[in-house]
Amino acid sequence: MEKPTEIGIVLALITQDRGLEKVMGRVSNHFGSKFIVHEDCEDFVNHFRNYERGIVIVDACVCSQARLMDLQMVLNEAPAWRVIYLPCTSKKEEVKEAMDLGAFGCLHKPLSEQEVRQMVQSAMGI
Image 1 (cartoon, one colour):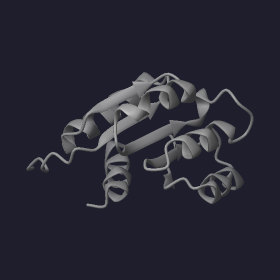
Image 2 (cartoon, rainbow, N blue to C red):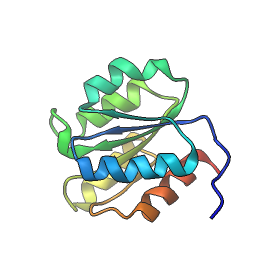
Image 3 (cartoon, helix red, strand yellow):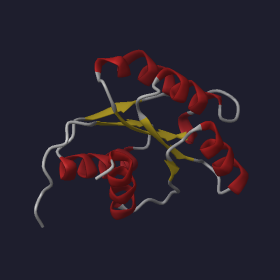
Image 4 (tube, helix red, strand yellow):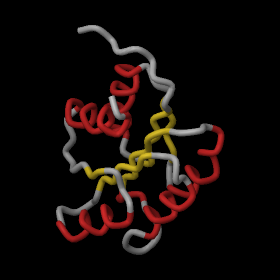
C-alpha cells in the first residue's frame, strides 16, 4: 500500500496508555505526521502552541478534572486543533456531551488501527 503524501499536521495524544501510544505511532507514520505524546491535558495546553494546527486525541482516563472539564480546557485553548475524545466509559450521554462541547469525534476502546486511521483521516479532511 502506498504511503500518503506528508500532510504537515501534528498528531498529538494525551494518554498514559502505551498500547494506544503504539497504535497512534503507526497511524502517524502512515500519514507522515509528527507525533507527540502528552501525559495529561495540562501538559498539552502548555506545549501545543509550538504547532499551528493539528489533531489531538484526549484519553479521558488521564483527565484529572471532573466530568469533561479537561476536554473543555483543550477545546478552549486550542481552537484550531481537531479534538477527538476517547471516553473511559460507554455512556452515550458522555459522548453526546463531548460532541456538544465541540469534539470533532469520539472513539472507543479497544481501538483498531484502522478505526483510528479513518477518524484521523476524516479530521484531516483528506
